[in-house]
Image (tube, one colour):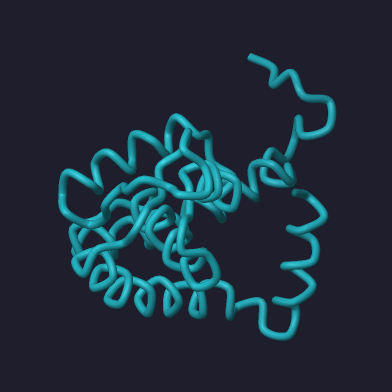
Length: 147
């Protein structure tokens, strides 16, 4: 059976998309496995970390703010927030700046999860992307161009 790609017919490994997804999968699997040991998923980590970051400068962070910064679908963030709230990681409260939206607040359990998880994720990032050596800044610039 013939492979229907004229560009990658003899070398699928030259496909930028395939190389990208393989690198992403290797990085993501390492992150997922490390976070599983801490009792949280990668999306939960992302949502809590973004909430923690945004809370530095805004006392009333909304679900929409979290979704926008994480570049995640609002409904997916909503589901993750429900799970995190049920597990006691965060709370929703009335937002005095917008009565249509709740404000989110990390509880002590959520702050502790981030305090434990963030160094683990940053270490994985340093090890994984550190292989780029002096090219890491250029790599980040390329990623920014793509998004």
